[in-house]
Amino acid sequence: MLLAWALVLFAAAAQPARAEAGLTYMFSKVPPAVTSALSVYAHAASDAAPEQFKDVEPWLARKTALPNVDMRGGRYWLSLRIAPQSAPGLWVIEPANSFFNNAHVTVLGSDGSRQSFQTGLTTDTEFVLHRGKSVKLAADTRYWVLVDLTTPFFSSQPRVDVWPIEQYREKVLTQTVLLLMALGAMLGLLMFNLFIGLWSRQRTATLYALQLICSVVGWSFYFNVPYDWLGVTDWRVNYAPWFFLLSITHCYFCIHFLELRRIGPSLARVGDWLALLAAALLPVCWLAPAYSHLVATFVVGSAVSFAVASAIWALSRRYRPARFFLLAYLAVLIPGLIILPPNLGIIPDFVENSDLLTLLGTALEAMLLGFAQADQLALADRSREQFRQQMQDARRLADTDALTELGNRHAFDKALEEYLTQQRLGASGALLITIIDLDGLKVINDTRGHAHGDALIRAVAAELAALQIGRCRAYRLGGDEFALLSINGDSQALATALSDCEKRLRETDFPEAGLSFGMSMASNPRSLISARELTELVALADGRMYEHKRDRRQGPRALRAEAA
Image 1 (cartoon, rainbow, N blue to C red):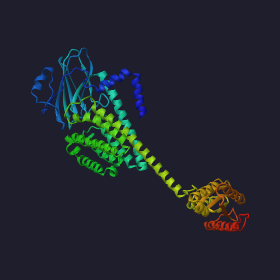
Image 2: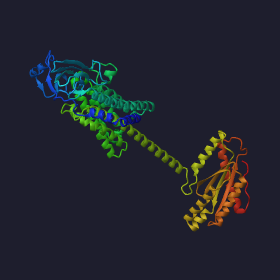
Image 3: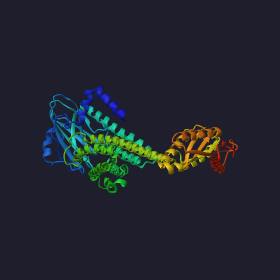
Image 4: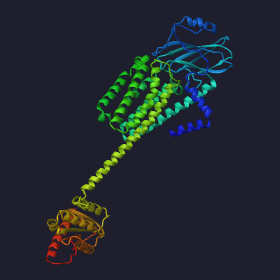
């Protein structure tokens, strides 16, 4: 999508004069031919255009002049005069600026010439997606252009444009490129979101894809794509129903994207009522087609206003994804405010092709809503990561002794369960279990205070955590009791290391301290042991620790881990 825009910008840079001319012709208010103001007349039954230039003014004088057409459609005569041109050439005359079913155009020259053609939904086009057709204008000749226009409804006040053919081609090319780019961008976003929504069952993406379907089809009909490409000729197949459906999907997308049912239930109910209203008014397109455009304009305008108001409210509640959402609907609201009064027939268009400006705003809206969805997904990912980190921290705290930062009793039990699992997978070695009791802690607490006792516990924990006998991990089981789990550890080396730890403690600030310990290991380290046997090994190490404590009270004695 961005590559397509880049190619257009590159082409514009390569031929700046042509690009500037195309944009000028496309958005200029008055076409470069010298014409009079457009006049509108009521159409009488069996009314035909005059045959000669000189008969036009008397013929028009007998007709009822109207200030404007009725937006509810009907049959009208449109007339304008073309001033004499200095040179002959091909020109294009186009009934424009509104939806219409059929137009019969008659061009009468003061030189006696008469040209006519028919354009509309049922005729072939000379210029892609446009209803203009070429005529020959002689030099220094005045012309009347009479248009017999029939339509079920108007989408804006009609206009009759007269262009030199080369300038008209530039205009058609520029407008068609921008039109197809806008529709292509929305179509690409549609396919992506439809795939994501159906594959991952994300309701927001699915609703966004449905909104884009309605928007792409509706705007395609608005700019004659199905009529020219697919050969559709029935005016009853038009854009209006799709804009009703667009409003319905739009309201539900807004509700789900902004999570209004959670953060704004009242606004969510407003969106529900707007969607219900659009659904209830949809049959107008077939039961009263003359009112379909006017009602569709009201429904779409209400839906966009609802989205903007909801986004502002969500932003006030610090709902971050509403940022791009608000920008998206401002992108369609601003050109919509330009096109809305002319669509209702209140005033003439401010600029030519205001409907194309609205389509470009809609394409920008679609892209910004894509950014909003990406922002929402990124926010959700960050929230999930924060939750995962919080859960990890909670598990770590649940498994960690607060005073020593060693694993606690819960972590010790989990390590034994993990050993049984690894053992069944053949990924573990022989397990050496050591239960340790810290002697002298009560004496230190009673004589030197609990702060000193806590310092002793932390010192012992630091000594045990630093041991490198096999794959060794230390735990504080509670109070003055510690444990070591060592995979493929050497019991004699560990006993020596623990004696050295005790010596270092006594040589520092804890002369009263001592370490009583007991060890156990399976009699056949290569055989699998059960959970019951593992529990018995822990009890055996605990019993030997108490034996060691009694022996220390009776005198020094070397300790050796005996087979269980």
